[in-house]
Image 1 (tube, rainbow, N blue to C red):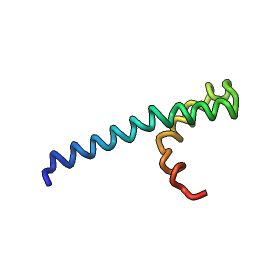
Image 2: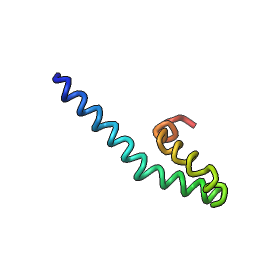
Image 3: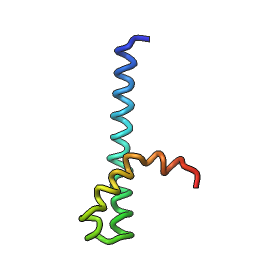
Length: 65
């Protein structure tokens, strides 16, 4: 395979991954954190924690409970 094609596909997959994480999972986890812990806690640290959780969301989606 052409290395340019492979690198463009890798970049496309990374962009798609972070796009889905930021459009779907980030608002979901931020809303959950704010509703469970309160808006003040969400403003202080929750936005960072919830957004970080959204970036690694496939772990939470596919991990066995």
